[in-house]
Image (cartoon, rainbow, N blue to C red):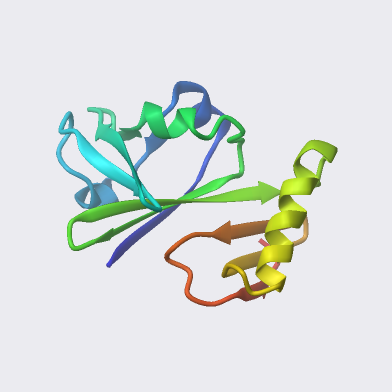
Length: 141
């Protein structure tokens, strides 16, 4: 399995493309070739442009709350490319706290597996089919 994790910046969200490092371009088909990008059981059309940016407008449309600091992980196994979103919650807001608490409760109650990363600025929660056990990771990053 090949894996790439990228922290999203303002520019990548604004123009709708994730910059892929040249050393990781082999994870994806050639420029301009359309492919399926899987999130859970849903496939989104995606393609690389000639500036090493992965573009998937339909996936972005499904995630209007993306913000700088969120992370995406790409996993390639047996030719299938999956994407996992890790939302960054530096300071919970009234509008997002209900969702965050619901996710944390589901993890606590064993309904889903998740990875909770604690750092000096707050926390991040990662959920997805690729996670096989719950973890809490404390660090300073």
